[in-house]
Amino acid sequence: MRHHGQMHVPRLDVAGGPAPEPDDTGAADQPHRLPRVTSFRTRRSTLSSGQQATWDRRWPDLGMQARSDDGKPVVDLDTAAWFGRSAPLVLEIGSGTGTSTLAMAQAEPDIDVIAVEVYRKGLAQLLSGIDRAGINNIRLVRGDGVDVLEHMIAPASLTGVRVFFPDPWPKSRHHKRRLLQPATVALIADRLRPGGVLHAATDHSGYAEFMAEVGDAEPLLRQVSDSDELPISVQRPVTKYEQKALAGPDITELIWEKRP
Ligand SMILES: C[S@@+](CC[C@H](N)C(=O)[O-])C[C@H]1O[C@@H](n2cnc3c(N)ncnc32)[C@H](O)[C@@H]1O
Image (cartoon, rainbow, N blue to C red; front, top):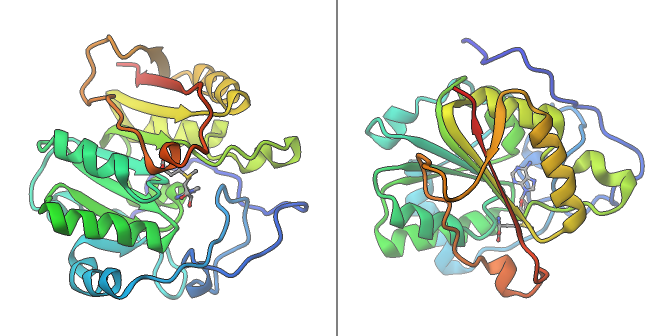
């Protein structure tokens, strides 16, 4: 099988990261996976019986792991076969409980959305929402968004990438854990089609500056505003994360398009 692209994304882990916690990322199911810098914390979570029932019923069709049980990445995802149609494709990395995913997919039924999250309970909440609302244009991947971009997604195939409230990793020694690093932004830019959009939001001013620098330094991207004509909506609903008042009052929205 062909692996997409030759881009190198840093993989080695660092000292000084957070202490290991009980794992709910799927990484425990992946014994051969190399240690690496990750942008996520591991969290334990138990599904309610209703969530588990929905998971058992819908996950086989609507969800997949980014890596198989023996740790091998899934490669070259056939999105047209998975969605049963060819439509503009958006990848949301770190979808949390899926509030934005659900609302934005409902508002744009002609766009297909893949939600990537490591947190199983969040995916289960999104799956239950999809089930209740009868939505057909969302699929879910459990795993690391960088893995998904690297192995599953073809170059120039995405119309949009959404990253809403990524973990800010405020301490300087943890900045290398931030999801939107130069290498990851370069990978996102490669996977976007010309004119495709990277839309990021954060309530952390330090991360906002960091993101702006990283995105503006990427030669394939140029910053645009929400008043420009864009191929996807950048109208974002208030997410669970914001509702919980974890977010500060100042939210920075950053939008780039891939240069033609
Ligand atoms: C602060 S939460 C925000 C969730 C959601 N976007 C919102 O606005 O409510 C960040 C989420 O990103 C997820 N995450 C962090 N790094 C990730 C990665 N590399 N791949 C997939 N998910 C990731 C975390 O598990 C967490 O659920």
